[in-house]
Image (cartoon, rainbow, N blue to C red; front, side):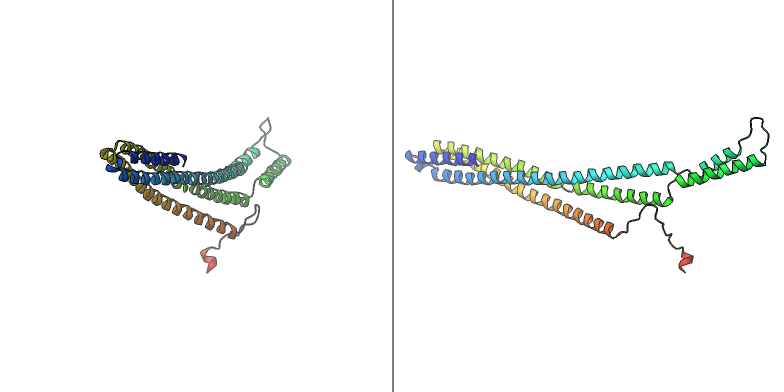
Length: 276
């Protein structure tokens, strides 16, 4: 705004200077009007640049918050996936349990003699005890199912958080582009005012036409920037609203979904025969 004020003062001084000579015989009045219009354009562009930059900062802050939520959801997913892998590693498969049982029962004395009745009974007792211990220490199937459900839910939340953050990208680019193009229009207005000042001092209609051309270019840039920025922001706002609606629906589903505690019994779904 200070640049606009200085240029307007310069325009006023140039206008007063033009009236002392023979400028009233030339295109002095038209040049003065042109300088006034260019000054208004300059002030408008300066205001729009400040507005676009302010909106850009606000949008980037909001997007940064969304990316923070995405990082938090990603951390939760990685933790639950690690816990699920530990549970799966602690759970012996049927093949591993059968192999251990067969290996234990196949043990023989160093002399290779067959086991007597007492030895065979002890080996059976040890094998069954190991099976019971493995069953006791291994996680229940319900626990693994619960962690798998949590992993799926967190993966869905991560995807949704990423979409929310990416939805702001269009608005960020629109504000950046808008500020850049309004600055170009502002530059055209500044150049036009300087050229118009020279035209007023020299009472030259040709130089004045160059300043008019600068103003026309500035107006074209302003119109193009406004239309494209408005369209891009409208599309970005639509994406942001859709992402917010999806997030609200998912949160509602999470609240309505009953929490399945680890170790809780899972009731199997009835078979088609049972339903009949």
